[in-house]
Image 1 (cartoon, protein in one colour):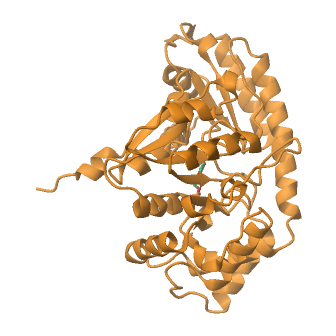
Image 2 (cartoon, helix red, strand yellow):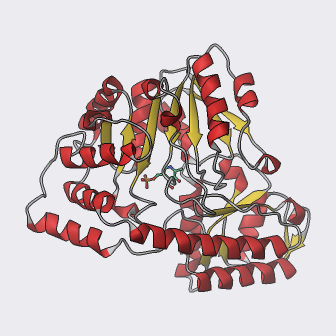
Image 3 (cartoon, protein in one colour):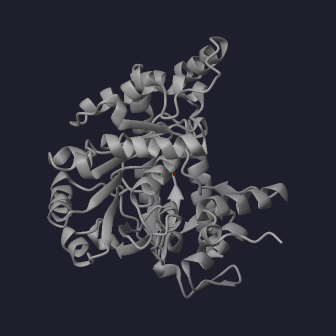
Length: 395
Ligand SMILES: Cc1ncc(COP(=O)(O)O)c(C=O)c1O
């Protein structure tokens, strides 16, 4: 008799993928759903990158690559970080099958059962499951809307116990779009150094920041941080390459080598074709990245302004990423279209089933009473979806 392992039973399916699956199910019944659940840019992958993938196939780059990635891509990534103030050698870079895989490798290579990992919330749905899969313990530390969803360093410090091993940072954040300032990160760095902690800094949205603000590479802000920090990023969000599955981790050489060993046993290597295309993405003219960023900023302004006009909702304007994360507590306790709305899950269930708008409940991100809308969708579709949401709220 086959039984699910302890490890597998610790893992729950991703809430965002579950919401998207429910939307697809309704769509197969012929219902038009405005789906704002997924964190996936709607733009096509820019043509020079696609062309590079085609060329890689024609040139026969269709075989295993070194387990940790091609030297060409590791070098391109290492060079990229010079511009972000971090000196990185190619053998400090591990290329993986998406940033999610990089996170898994980083945790598998550094965490032991019982280690505590401090995670500011609202947080990206996968973090706690990825931590739990190693036997380590996620410790969730809430930051409020009033705090800009950024955890003050003092509260981080208060949560430290003798078992605390690591802090998991994500700026710009999914789901809130919050961008920590350099000064805030410096305060966090002081705590990290004072308590001999390590850090995983997920910076996958680093290029999607608005209003002229800058995302700070955490490891770059103090000379003692690179030895205790693993920086995670990738091409999925910046270049609209979610399906190509290329992410990376940057860290001290022995840790990167350990991650490489794990990866070599698990997946052999990332896709050879995607790696060739990722080199093109990183080294080509970057104006398409700027064009996408500007479009996201226009959508962000429009979406947040509309949500803030709806009674019962509060939507802070995110500094980065492509999500509006808004407070819906003012809508709880109501009955909408015959459904009693008590929790954010009820709110999202009602919005989907009766309003035909797919959002993700804040509780999936450790922040009950909120909802997340991904504005990685065209302006016409965003407007149609917000019209539908308003209509549902009035019903
Ligand atoms: C914060 C964050 N980290 C990592 C990832 C994973 O990215 P990838 O598609 O490269 O695995 C995502 C994707 O949604 C994300 O939002």
